[in-house]
Image (tube, rainbow, N blue to C red; front, top):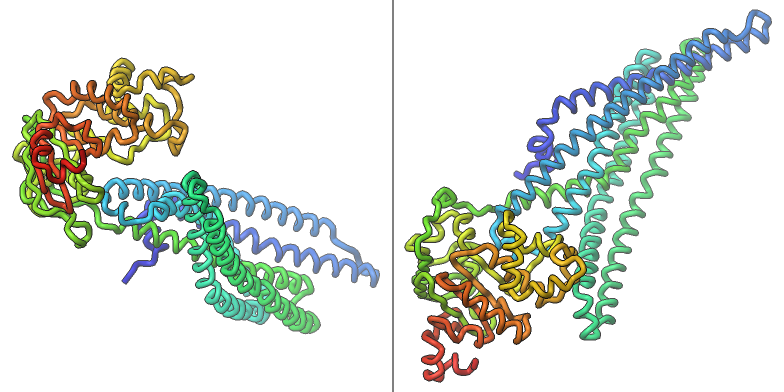
Amino acid sequence: MKTNPLLKFYKEYLKNEKFRIFFAIVFALLAGCAASIGPNELGKVTTKIIEGITKKVYGTGGIDFTYINNLLLMVLGLFIIGLTASNIQGKLISKSIQNAISKLRNAVNKKINKLPISYFENKDEKNILTIIDKDIELIGQYFTIIVNEILTCVSIFLMIVVVMFTINVAMAIITVIMIPMLYLVISIISGKVKPKNKSAFEKNDKLSSYSEEVLSNRKLIDSINNKEKILNRFERLNKSLGIANEKNQTTSMLLEPLVTLVGDLNYLIIAFVGANLVIKGIISIGDIQTFIFYNRFLSKPVYMVGEISSIVFSIIEALNRIFDLLDEEEIISNAEDNHLVFKNGDISINNLCFNYSNEIEILKNINIKVDGGKKIAIVGKTGSGKTTLIKLLMKFYDGYKGEILLDNNEISKISTKDLRDKIGIVLQNNYLFEGTIKDNIKYGKQDATDEEIEKAAKIAQVHDYIESLPNKYDTFINENSNNISMGQKQLICIARMILKEPQIILLDEATNLIDIETEKKLQIAMNEIMKNKTCIIVAHRLSTIVDSDEILVVESGQIKERGKHEDLIKLNGLYARYV
């Protein structure tokens, strides 16, 4: 059975804040006590004024202003105490919730770093971003407000009920009877609001994701002249969201008039019964005023349930998504303590087979032997399994059959950190982080000096470009890194790999976005860098791999041809067709 997300949130993230929460409850009760006594004292003021006016009319006395002033000063004191206690309560709850949210955010961040790459490739990136940004922010924003409201209303409710029964039991019972009636009304409306609210939330999320997708691919949309189709789909999604919101709001709007109707009926009953009790001399007129005040106060916590129900449902949905992420299966490895003792950088792949999620095999019976310091190249059609092989070498995936050995050590039994520390990789889809060019180049070697950074940039043939910028290496790259060209972005990523000084180099279409002239210069420089390093290169441009010690031709997940460039040309097979 699935644990209630609110209870789970308390147990795992709020429980350590129990002392703050305890004192928050104490101050909430103090504020509730002050709020409940105040109307009773004002009722006494009303009674005293009416008694004084009556005495003045009959000539037997007047209004006792000293008594009234003392009561009003007491009410002012109670107001100040209540306000102060409520303020302290709010600060304690806010601190507790924000501490819990901080822990939750850290837990999500740690979890993401422990999830396998396959998780991110099988999930919509926008849904993950929604959890990290919107869901946690939603909980942080509204949870404090809701908890404070609940504490305030519950404390006032309890204190008012106690005071009412000390004044008159019959009137107290009549006032309290309203509560289950209000709760019944709110329960019926809330039951109808919940599915409509969930539907509206899902449609809003879908529209937001689509809008983000359109903005991210604006150039592509403009280039293929597809704006009309985009606008039509946006209108459909927007209309669907509008209908869902209208249904949700229409149902929610029924709540206030129905609650008001129940409250007004109760006012009439209190006034009628109270008047009879006043005539009989059982209670005073001021007591009727007090009960009317209390009737209004008591309706507030019940009405609040309906007001915040949609927010609570949103918080529960957000917590469910967060906990689903936190419950995802992590990369479990007993190899993290098995440190790699690097020797020559020999790589052996024996009878390797692999598929994604039990689908058709991507790699079939792959056998590769790369001696330390040698360079091999892999070529083949798109989708033939070249990039998958690179990802397996980086331990981005596990669950393969066969062996992947580094210096005769199975990589699944080697510490992931140690393995990746020895490998420098440049993938097809390069990424630069928001920050300066210098920060991006030294991302894999944080203690690098400016001289080392410039040296790596020169080898990568990007130094001259950086120097031409107004802020040079301190040029800021924005969030989407769209303020530099794709080619320059790729060169910066190559510089980042060079600076790391890896023993093994993996290049997956690392120069596909670079112009031919720059590529030739880069190739000469890279040949020096690759000396005495184990290199595996995936490429479509055959000019970059003709000097490889061995070239493998992969098709449909299998190695179809292997040999040096000249030998494969003479073979006149698959490789020859690529030339």
